[in-house]
Length: 213
Image 1: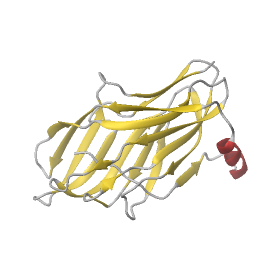
Image 2: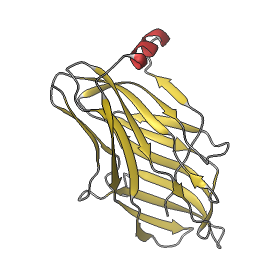
Image 3: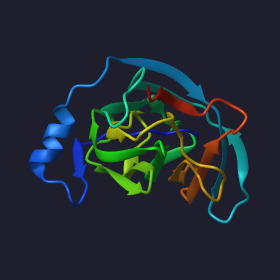
Image 4: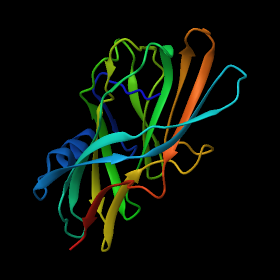
């Protein structure tokens, strides 16, 4: 099973940044950006109640807009847009506690981030959780499975450090460290279950590659 979300636009600033500085960073011009589309294969498993885990595959589509190159210490924006999904109401009637993880470049400073767009989330609130260089789009729900669900775009403002290549990837390394997870109410059991996914390390999982020149 595969699910996605939307919600009201959210914005979070780093603790030491003032509103004026944050606004200036967000509006600063960068090099011309282009959008790339790719599909990331995920290993997934799900289980209802106390039942056994059942494996399945869950590919997710992404469209990522990022500059082709940046200069040392340049501030720039990456936009991550994950594809919409139609949850199958034959298997789940409700979805909660969704989390989708993005891993940002280690050789860049995260200056700010916000959510835009999204569809089919109803009144569910969506926010960003930060942990080091990982940003997660999360919502507690509830979400219905009778409509197409589309998570908001994640826009991230970063500043490149001195040299190297800036690489962003889909998050998650194992079922103990999932990059995508959610809970669901099963049909016809009406029992709550959970699903966990992480990118297939043998498949494409790099979302953007930006040389510092």
